[in-house]
Image (cartoon, rainbow, N blue to C red; front, side, top):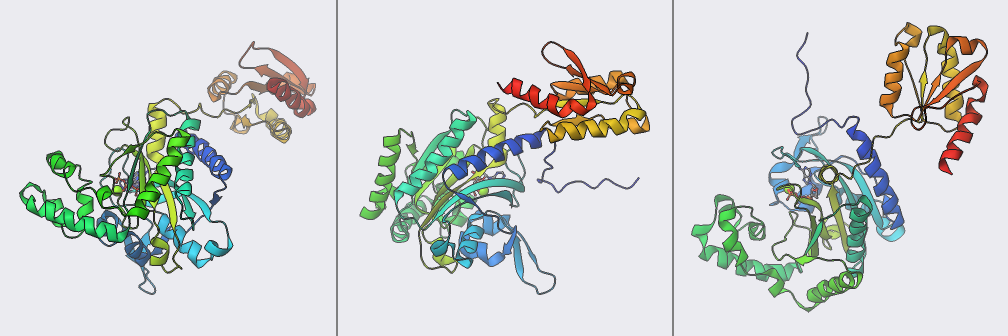
Length: 430
Ligand code: ATP
Ligand code: MG
């Protein structure tokens, strides 16, 4: 036998039964997004590399070391598997004029690619669901996006998801703060680790984000961006806080929350859980008023968030909030090859009447004893078994046996299966 070919490291197959949880979650998200008037967008997985270099910033983790980039074989164009979707959504909105002539509240779902060290909650292909509101400047829309996420946690029955909030101000405010930060960190250079030394003059704000325990005291005492915000930035921040306070949404202000991408300004936020170990951020976002202009559109403000689907599912599992497997309504038991034709007809009638039907397969080849089929019927979780016994079929009859409540069994003509199911499901619903 040839060697097995395995999936790429850090990229996962999503198989039954877990895939049912994905579908369930995606359904919930679609309904919720539509309830907030966010419309679905689907952009390409491959984008020009320049989109991310320009959009995310050259000295970000993603652009420095996490992108899957390659050259188009024909024309040498530099391409990249999208590491995130905001840049692509903004590109699409600008390219298709959505900002002036289309829906400006958008959401997406899909795979992202980052070359990171695979570990729990961190994969090389992972999935995000994101919401973006383009062209709105006020903190009311920042709040709307936060409400959207809070509603999701509530609908999913999750507990212990906390909101952290910060303001990054505007570029000029960041520059003043950056200078103060570089002064402070330079004065303490002996306390910096290698990564921090490297970032000192490229992206000192990211040093505040360090996970190195030895540097926590140092960064805790560093100059805070919040103290460098001008009046307009503070007004935006306080405006957001007022709306959240009024709605009773709890949050903590985390002055060290800086986010990985350069494009953020003003509000930034993360939803965090303690239940997932060190990969505890399940949803993150903020305002990115400069991005649209940066990638070639007319200047316009914007705000959005993205959540990590793998982490959210892991949290749902941890808190035992995942639903049972979806079961068929009816399992069709086919004891003999002679019944195979009737079985196809029975399934057709039941499905036309709206039943979810799983047929025992293989009978036409003589596979599956009555006993093993009943075992499978039970294992499927179906509420009913429809049995196409030979003797009964000779009279045109089939048996419907309840697998749940009282094991009741009734006989009826095969041709009546559709009306039987309609009656039964209506009675169940009542
Ligand atoms: P981190 O600090 O954990 O690397 P990030 O700032 O790079 O996160 P974002 O780019 O903001 O993450 O992505 C939003 C969300 O997507 C994260 O909060 C997380 O839930 C999820 N996410 C990001 N990277 C990964 C990954 N490699 N594997 C799985 N989920 C991820
Ligand atoms: Mg990251």
